[in-house]
Amino acid sequence: MKMICPSILSADFAKLSEEIKEVQLGGADIIHCDIMDGHFVPNITFGSDVVAKVNEITNLPLDVHLMIENADKYVESFAKAGADYISVHYENNYHLNRLLNKIKSLGTKAGVVLNPATPVFMLKNIIEYADFVLLMSVNPGFGGQKFILNSIDKIIELKQMINKSNPDCLIEIDGGIGLENIKLVSDAGVDMFVCGASVFKAVDRIGVIKEMK
Ligand code: DX5
Ligand code: ZN
Image 1 (spheres, protein in one colour):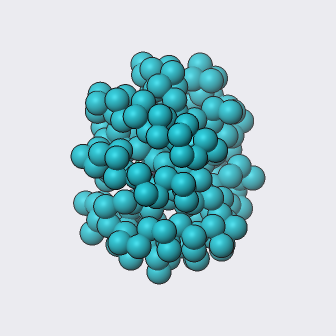
Image 2 (cartoon, rainbow, N blue to C red):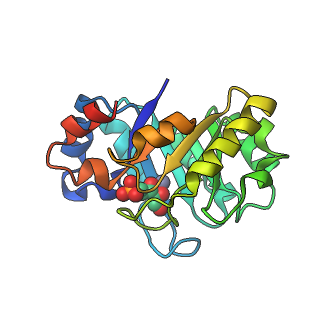
């Protein structure tokens, strides 16, 4: 199943409740929550208390993308807050097997994230432990950036690796996804589409989600 995952990074936080309800009404499948600490990425967002509030607003699954140092210290609090999916970056987590197992032991789906400059082959020895892989198609930190085109080659390469080593593993794409490229990445093999600006900055959010689907 293909899933649209609006990222609340681009929502109006003063109206978070209404905006989440609107995209849910539009057919969003998952709510994507971007957690940034100002160290791993040059921006700061919100923590598990806000995620817990989002969980009160919606009954959609929550996808928590951790762009933070020491993610191992925080995964438990995000799982308790209601995360259904938690992803951690390859680049700053030294003991990924242990961390993915910890996330799964909390009853949460465990994902690995690759930055645009990290090659897919780095996943060779971890792919079998992942429920999903998130490919960043922009450098993490901000919404509204331009899709990096070589992400398509990475999706195709990842899909081949998944078919061979872990066919149940899902592919998520994050960064610069909109109506102009969603079919392209879908055809390449993506299952979960994170959409920030293309949904929340649109005049007709519900129309955009429907057209994406
Ligand atoms: C970027 C975040 C994304 C962001 C995507 O660091 O991980 O989830 O919200 O925003 P758009 O879709 O606007 O590129
Ligand atoms: Zn994200």
